[in-house]
Image (cartoon, rainbow, N blue to C red; front, side, top):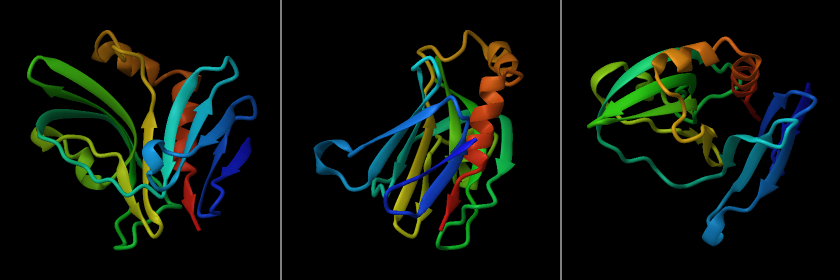
Length: 166
């Protein structure tokens, strides 16, 4: 495993030796720094935005939580602890899959839940995390559950759980 630390020194994470991380400034002069994690074949797997200032807005969805776990190295300034999650949301006639860190409220399951928000509060603005899925992400929920048994899923989950704020 290797460790990546954002240039401001606040957020770091561990990732597989064969993967790489590249950074970029956000578009249109927005604040913060972006990091994209890529596997050994050059596929972009994960987006992280550090020092972001945007918020979240959404509507009601039906959410099924496939997996969730504590992220012991992260805590919001108000003491809220972000949670790792992998979910599917249904809205109208569509479905969307999300995996990353979120406020615990984005992991409420059932009808009428507020749509996923991957922005968690930090002392330097906010952290946004998003696993980059193809479109469509999965053919069905059974395929999503099967992906959870793969090395890629385990590695992405371990990376997200390893996030720390200093």
